[in-house]
Image (cartoon, rainbow, N blue to C red; front, side, top):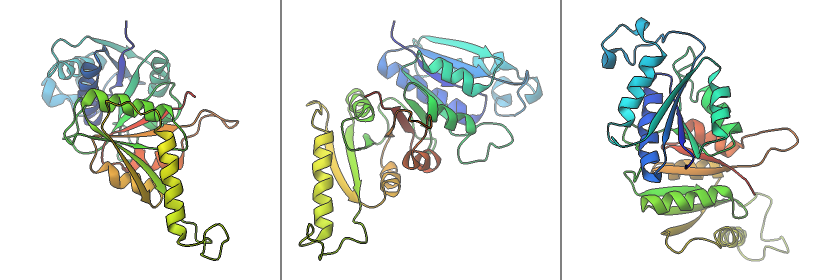
Length: 287
């Protein structure tokens, strides 16, 4: 049986949007959807589901949240296989455990607790930083949906070599019939001048050419059936990819393997998770 897409839901509008997106994605990939509600309290304290259920928010419990999430998942995909689970445990621990046997984990960008107005919820950040599988954090406006998307473009930030993130982006672009914009950011250090013996001529041109060669090397194994556009853009990677996110249905970035200090999320991925205009997929490097 194919590995399921896992989506975490807490009853907040952000998490229900994640369910919508995850259902689209699971249907596109032909895999089951597993909806997880992990909680530390017996009752839901918010009001997001009250209107849909027709009961006071203080009377909404875990089963109600899962009922609504399942209903939303099957709204556009009535034949989608959906399983649910409610677990009385810290959400990040539950989702990280589920990630060991998932094709991807999908989470909303905000939760429903006291810190719900922060740019990114602590659960989403912890899962994106540590999970064994790709994690997709649903950002952007309410028009963003999974499946084939609205804009027809996927953006991937390209590092120095072929990575799991690039391979993930190939597959997403192929399934969606989308254009894949492979972006390599480059910068000209301020100390580089035309007096440098290796930089005769225009230093900017030298750095741009080097970035183009690195990009070609990283995309050497690109599938022939993926519509691939290559871009080398001057500027900090965070700024370049944030700009690109405004024209994309999905932004894909990599996450390096754990080092001596354990799991760490790079500054680029961290910034994108907080500010991207579209959903962000964080893909751990398995190479």
